[in-house]
Length: 445
Image 1 (spheres, rainbow, N blue to C red):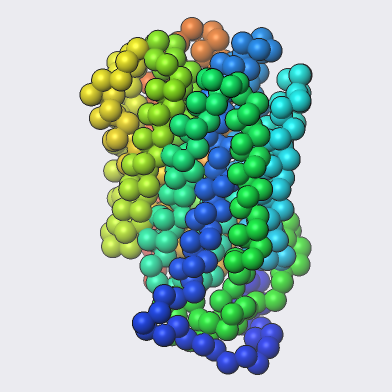
Image 2 (image 1 turned 120 degrees about the vertical axis):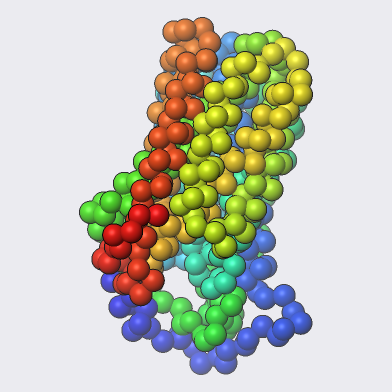
């Protein structure tokens, strides 16, 4: 449907196409920069959950399982909203969807300062921020990359994926200091203000399509007309899903990415700080270690994008998952009251691998599903967040039941080994095959 629609479109105006002069930076890079800053602003809230588990437990006497349930709702909606957000961006434009999403994040985060009941935490922190951040998920980065870039897609995907880690790097030390010295409410307000501060940049500087400024996508040889708005955004997202689920690669990608989410957002991002605090490490020190993960995550993700443009993405993913699983098996032995060199080595090693899986996973979605790849990736991302949501909840329950997190670290390491095997059996698509679901070669990756 998408291909037919795009083929039938013509430019909305007769403005001449203005190819970017060779001595000037292409407009696509400015759009990517605005997208990077926008994702950083939206990532502020993702720095907060792990810092609030202990303060909310102490103030309201809520169990860690209850708090983990709110985080689970947030993570699940973050993923389940993504494919619909990609379709909504096709229907209403990137700029409108992103501006509304940032506003919803700000409202949800700001309202938490008045909550007194657990259901209010699940409404504000889980529902509102989950919906808003889901619209700012990696499907946003995928849509921008697909529209504005013909070349360097792997590199751009890596850079935009790293924006989330950069937001963690920027906000974690500040928020941990606020939570420790001034309580959790000023931290929640800071997150709300950060989301609102990005809205003017989005509205004034972001553009939906290169045709809006009469330019070609970066690396394109000819003008690409802007497609007409696609009605029935929700229907299209579901239709693409129903088509994708009939293919084997979708289930392998979704299953491996669910394990990716379980071992990162659901486990380490949510429970590393309280787990380290259980061993006597100060909250500010544990939060600083997570921020260091953010530093090396930027390096690892950008490097992964560069590798994805040059090497087989299946093999890259298998290596990433295997190394992540090995590192998680060693983590219970490294937690201690103070930061020591082996822990620093783990943080650096794990940080390089944190979301390095995104560029090769997105590349496989493009290879298998062509023009629908952004929406398919949105559904694959949904599985990522469902996996994260399950582990965010189950890890809290395990901590309440066993009094420690060790069993969760070991289980996650074993799951990563399974993910490495899953991605290796994804079959290649013939280069000349249609961009939907037909034409799979019998050769394994």
